[in-house]
Length: 229
Image (tube, rainbow, N blue to C red; front, side):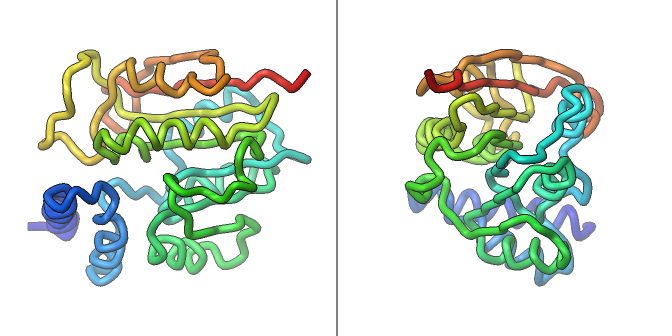
């Protein structure tokens, strides 16, 4: 068995143990610790930004100069560094202290503000504070509950006139998650629609081939919060 297979097996065990204790997020820190001890990273980690995020930023020709961004569940920081390179003053957070420590070590010259934070208990000062909010694969790594609460918290990060981009594995049925399919669990259109609460408008719910999944469908959904009157 490869190291990657070992880490996938560890992930499944940690998730099962946490869910048995009714602790939906208790497996993140132990997984990052286990991955570090194994000399690797969680199974979903990539040293490059998520492919659909990079595709979207290229198409939009984003220039973040003078704007703020936040990356949700940043892990080891590839997405955050990508957003920062576009000129955004970037905050990136993760529940796992080990993930944040490794992200800082991996990017020693970074201007990203890496922080340990719980998506379900975010600082009040972050509410509607960011011009760009990047959510890649975080909510699909959570069961429901607390997935709905996590979606609402992410939506509340978007400033007036700001944009949210959501990247997720996709599925076409609306049934419950398949326990053996994740994490991360592919998500239906209902999850994508749920982000459009709290005043956000769903601009582009694109269902596109995801290069990271061998061309299987992925969500690349864009939302906007109307500018303040």
